Image (cartoon, rainbow, N blue to C red; front, top):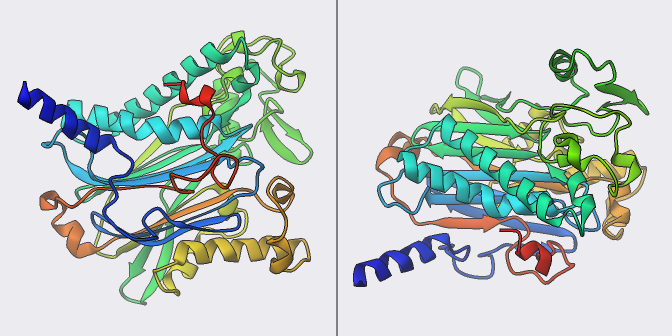
Length: 397
């Protein structure tokens, strides 16, 4: 009886979002207007920096970093998990992913006692199925939830291996040192699923050869069925299940012709990268950052500035670029409130993970303390930077 109680308490402790080992006022980050940031922290094999700036009325970007034991079983591997979830149509899907994806990954890691492509794929599938059940339950009273979705970018460092999985158009970029020249060059680790890419349009046409309007150029932007730019996501059930593409869903989301098979996919692209001593850092970011910087520009910013506060710095530089494009001062942009701010830039989330080659070289023997941080903090009041879940959303488990 006592052993069962101890196991229960141990499991509760492992699942707690408060298990962050740094103390002090920066334990869950700080806030400056619509900007939330955590300048520095330590994960199992290095350091990290995080920042989030809100543009939408409700923050649609969600993010997290989890480091330590990757499941509740003490014999499971240790590692670091990074997640960037860029929502669209509302915050419900990205919030759901933020609460459930890592739990699913932990469960499958526990079952297999290892990290693998299969574990990650199963975690994505379980998250998609879980959100579908939410939509099914809420459809009678909240039908528009069928048109809410999210991109989903994750990275898992386990041992000397980095797994990167992606749905949508967020991006992971590696900064790698070239010893001969001393340069740090950018290498994109993630595949993107946005209809603006010719390869994505070709993929959609090959998957739907009987649909001449599977991708449509609308207002100079390529969109799947003229509705959405991304071809893969979590959620967006109205383009996956025909029973949700009907009244009372808003007319702007409904297709004129019925469809028999899913238009969008929830199958992630997964790459496996064996970490090398010259690998310096990885930038994980929502597309709000990549609207302003290309891969090498972002890597140069990280390489040429101090590590502490680097995520906050690169977000501010992106905001300065957004202001410059609108021929306004950054100081004036900062005065614009959320909601209206979306006309100037998107929500932007950045997590920069630095890689310590000495720690990675002995990663199989590392057993560090647990880290759990969610972008935007975990204790902000409702309707502020990162709105808390509503009672309805709290019941979606």
